Image 1 (cartoon, rainbow, N blue to C red):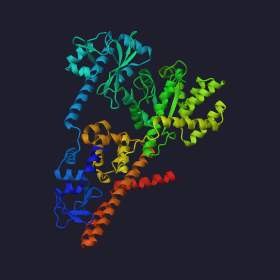
Image 2: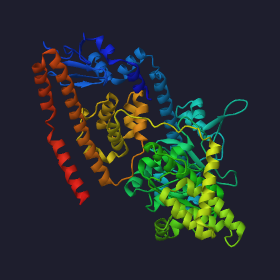
Image 3: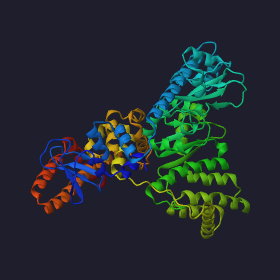
Image 4: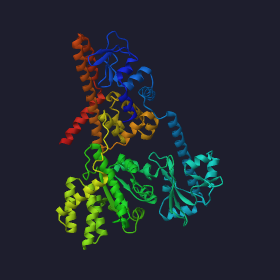
Length: 613
């Protein structure tokens, strides 16, 4: 439960509103003179069961407890949340602490940018950058790519960078916090990097979070990264993502390679949907970033890795992230019966060659490798066949033990039968025997995990359609032209209204979040990271048009439901005609959608007809 929902759950809207107006019982609801305009006949109603209020007079407005406080007190959402949280006894994150944290992270980004500019200048310098430039030339990296990715070099000294940064006005503790320098025993600083090719690592928004560094001599390790800092978390960064994200969306595929040079070469040759992890296996955070852009991933692995158990485990982790979360979202997750959303393929490289070598030698050969990439299950089968001697009983038994858990984990019900049949032909063992062994593996895993362990409960939203619509807009900025057909009236929950209004001003996710009150951050992050079904641009446009229509229909149904409740109560109180006139006037105004909305509805209708044909 978010802090917003927690506050709503703990407060009685009747108690809150009663502090500002005198409410009178009216059936199951309460009524009063509207506090937002002058009137003689009460037209302001509070609906405790719904947790909402509405004026059926000239205002024609309504909302939840947050919107009431905001309007009555003349304050923004953040202040309303603070006021109501205090009343509900809910602890909020300190705004002051959050501002201090944001100021620190901004400063770390700034010092990293300053370091990147310094390193880049050294690389371009005729003398100091010669060794690094020779290395890059040998690897086929052009001057344009050096400039675009701001590659640099660190001097063969332990004090060059921090002395430069001190001259730029940065403090020593800031350099340490940014991971650019470390404290020396006996006092003073030493630079984190020296005599290395410097590769700025940028986050999705393009801000320098840290560095990857390659040795230019025989120093070991060959590659090192910045240490963990407030802005550099190698488990949550992908090299090249800031320059690849548009291409990933457009091509609906992300290609993941192993090294920085692979990314540089790929982008230099126009293969710009390529990213790399920070020298480690893919993580849940990195997969979460990728899934906001595409559900289709291709992994470019070294040929020598085929059949290695560690590599297979890495692919299993990626597959798990794609499958398990989808099923938890749909609340249909069962052990051994998952479903993959999107596709995961493996690009097998020629023996002894990295992606950058293949691309430099022949772009057409690279494209062919991508086009012929193995679906992940084919990779598992091919890897097992290459690792085990299938002409021997021991090799066939080992292949079965390697492949059965994979089949049971990652294949759907129908696919299980197909892959069990394939495995049966591969090893010469009956499908029934394999199925019995698979069931035994599943039982063992359940027992190991604990059969009574409860699955994580899926959060149940009170406004699922509103949140789906916002997630669609936030994750697809190019939909902004279509999204302007929406209005704040489409949304009932105040937190959704606030995020929608902020989105209208700026579709850029990072800038938008920065401008939101901290109390909305968790809700906003949930929308940005929400897993949506894979779809084409046309399908997303149609989905947004349907959302717009359905949200408007929801609003009308809410008003109709309120009308029926009030008319029923008015009958018992003898003022039915007065209430009926007020309600019908409001409904008449609500039933007059703008020309823009009519256009959206008509287009959605035509698109649905086109799909049905």
